[in-house]
Length: 106
Length: 162
Image 1 (cartoon, rainbow over the protein chains, first blue to last red):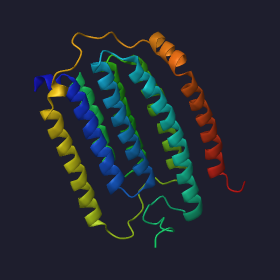
Image 2 (cartoon, one colour):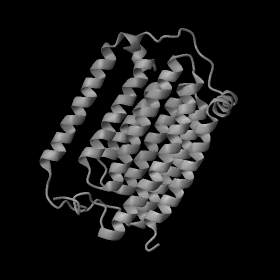
Image 3 (cartoon, each protein chain N blue to C red):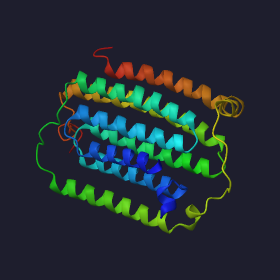
């Protein structure tokens, strides 16, 4: 247990999984698109924490950081397009609430 | 130290989940990203920590805060109708996920005994650059192309009439 609190691999994976669960909760429970977007970012960060913790545990492998570099580049793209979509939604419906953006709902 | 950064990360994320004001929620997200950067530092990976601070706590958060202020969506809008089932269902789903994950991690013998004994050296930028440009040059170029396409796409999406 003390090993866990001082940052063993187990501790990092635990933090990553809890961060992912919180992000998942945010995406499911909040109504604002912007907050849901923040939840997605948290889930992405949780994956990064797990990736780099495993890379460290396997002898400081440089491939893990290379992979992280590509993930972060794609995350930046995702952020730009996602926020552009939010702005587009606001243009058309004057709202950022997912309940009010129901044009495709039957 | 690990406990400090882990608590910063998780408490930042939790306060984001229950924050009504969107600007404050964005600042909670900054707190979480800084906690994650601290975790990367503790993993002896200063390169990833610097990237985390620059790209996440810098660029992405600024983008989110710009959009919040541009749309003047500081407060969450009133709900059309109360979704009690959705709220409690999502809480139950997230709790089930977190509980199951904690149980699996704590009972895993693989995670308890790390495969490589001894302390590996910290990540250095030279080794990273060598690996990136020797083995992953094509992927690097494709990422550049992806960034260009994203830029064009974002402009097209936001523009009022093209």
